[in-house]
Every structure is written in structure tokens, then in C-alpha cells.
Length: 232
Image (cartoon, rainbow, N blue to C red; front, side):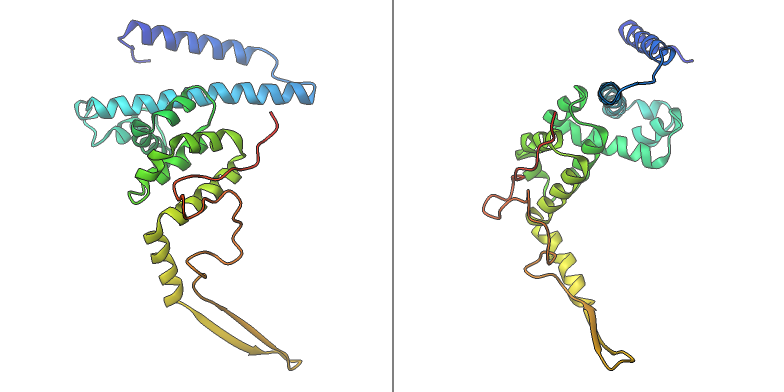
């Protein structure tokens, strides 16, 4: 194990290791639903906070250029090598670190364990889209609120719908490809009936039948609409 030179960092890592040791020594066998739910929730909160610390370390390695002194092309590559990560995991941490530099509210919620890595990574993918980045930053608080309030699947859908409304150029490009690739087939069955099948662009730049719950209106394209709250 390599030495951590900063005393406070070394002490913090030592306390974390001791806490994990003690946790793994106890009986993690909940006997009731309420106990299981509490254990799942409490462990998840602490795991989120540790993950936030991992992302923060990558960010500091990048800011200080420490990867160069270690012979790496980027902080992502250094962390991938030192932590023996997959490239996909290293990319997720790097994209999260880049987004959290600008999204301080998301970073705070992540560090407190109020939102998880899945939500942060979804927001980071939006942040990577330069066409919607400003709108995301302007409405960061709303994203944090929704990330806390709804299940991930609902949050993912809401964010996707938000991007489709705000990123009109990207939506138009996708819709144009569908239009260019449109086709239709009329097939007669053995019983003499006919079946029509095909594909075309969506109407008004949106997928037909899309669920609009939680999608912002065009007059206020920067806000995520309200979503269903989970019982606490």
C-alpha cells in the first residue's frame, strides 16, 4: 500500500477502512422488511459519498496536472491505471468530474449522499452536450430536486424529454434522418387481407405517443416539470 503523505488524508482513509472492517464483521442479515430497507438506504448513502470522493480525487488530479508527472496522458488514464478500472468506469468518473466543476449544487447533493452516481452520470451526459449546457446550469436546482424526488427510470425519461425540447437542433437532425430513411410496405396476406408497415419522421419533431408527463413546455424550455414523488 502506497503512503498517503497528507496526515489528514491518511487519518480519514484509516477511519474509513476501520469503519468498513467493522461493518463487514457484523451480521448483515436483516430479519424484517423495515430493517432491510433501512440497511439498503443507509449503505447506499455512504457508498454515494465515497463515490463522490473518488470523483473529486480524479478532478484534483486533473486540475493539478499530476497525471503528467506519473507519465499518463490524462487524469482519466491515471485513475484507470492506478485503480485498475475498466475504461467505461474511468470515463464515467471523468465526465462526472468535468460536469461537477460547473454544477456545484449537484456536487453538494452527491457528496451528501442525497443523489447517486447514476443520477450524476445522467446529468453529466447532458452537460457534455454543448447545445444545452447553459440551460442545464441555469436550472441546476430543478435537476437536483427531481433527481432526489423520483425513481431513476423516471428521472432518466424526464431528462431525455427535456433534452429533446431544449436541444432543437439535435432533435431536428435526428428527425431529419428518420425522414430521409422513411419507407412503407403494403403486404397482402394469404387470406387476402392487407398489412401496411413502415417508418417515418415524428410529428412536430417528437415521437408519436410520447409520454409528456414531466416534460417542460416550450415557453419555459429550461425547466423540468414536476414528477411523482416517492414515499419517504
